[in-house]
Image (cartoon, rainbow over all chains, first blue to last red; front, side, top):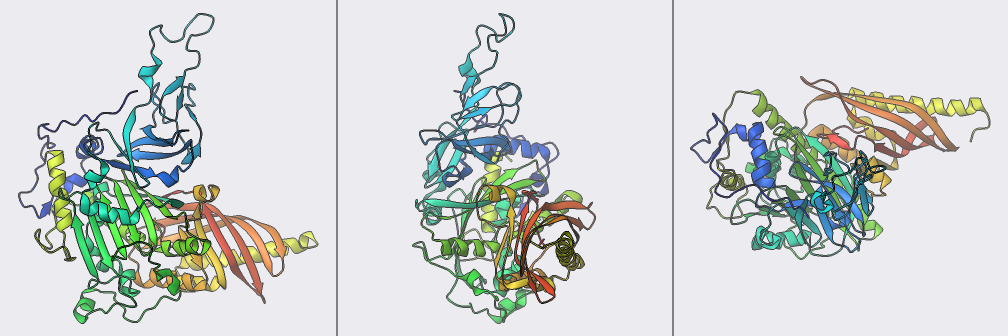
Length: 423
Length: 162
């Protein structure tokens, strides 16, 4: 069976698109990485089809034999399917005959995928199993004698899972996903995915008129949390004096923002209040249940926002558990697929608690609205204005991990990005 | 159900009048008064159609009780950052499904249009609302409002409720 192999060679020459140069100062980020179509095309090859594990979905999205979902590796539409034996396969959502994107439902159950154009039929491992009129009609027409069905399967990705999370790669000699995450990120990852059975609560989907890397940055940027998201400070969910850690993997591509919300309302120092425009000391939610926290993992942190390079964010905030799949759609737009889940052991009250709390996130969530709007503002600025490098200067690369007014993780990510892209 | 066609139409007229006032309030941006259209124990949900059809309970918005609606209204007025916009909330094809006084069950199609600065007007959301409306004196209030949207892939974000 054909497997998609990465076309990226580690020793490929630097091919910075013509006229573009990376600034000499590491604190500066050039705006063409967010807007240039040639850069976006190169990213598909070097990042999403490169030496990385791409998140494609959760096992609880395909819990039963023959379940499937539509998903994406980078910009490439794929199908994530569980076969009758329970194994998970990821293959291109593109018929090997004329190229039709054949799977047109978000989710379903079936052993066969039939391309509607000429009824070429594939099984849920991606194998071509039937071609109508292969021998023609009355001895006329049909496929040539030497046609080999086995050479025309759907192209598949290599697949691995870790505690219910499904990853795919085009690279045939990838390290394990555990090694890919590294020990510190893996430890936090396992507080969201401890291996306990998960129960899907639903999916949010949105487009966002911004480059996909802006979303990776947003979740590696603790600086914006209390400034953009005044819901957090107004209702005492998070303030900058909360104990926090910003931890990255050795290569700087993955990041974990951990925070601990104290019992009751946190104290906010006067100097902090002055820096937070909309701080309101006295506000209480009318419905306090939304902020309830039922401790369900063995972790000192009440919140953990993880970004896994290149396309996954996983979140545990109070009792909110979700993943975000970042799908690039050209340089100027991304699509976000949020999978919100609970545990299989949740009773009805816990499910409802999670549903109430999930008003904080998602494309109509109190934080979700603001992130999506802010990133749109950034892309508008980058695409409409005269070129000018952006800044990521806060903090220090050798600072203690409990510094949160910092852009250390963003700088780290772009060091890695430049290495992979050859910029 | 009401005994006569005329009585039935009167109920539908009441429901339409109520829905149109609700839409007008949102279009005017008077979000602070939005929760006043609900009973204290109201359940308000905005749910993607594919989730609804797959029996997945997640809400884009999920509120149990007026308090949660008041908290959302407060956040939209005081804490949320979003680009200013005009909204138009079209409601049509209202059908009264059942009347069991004081409750009226109705279904209505809706279309939410958004207009942002320097951008053409866009469809933000379209779908159907499934409402249980309670008659309290001469007033109607939502006891349940579930908006199931076809616009599953949301254009950036939904700021104002439907």
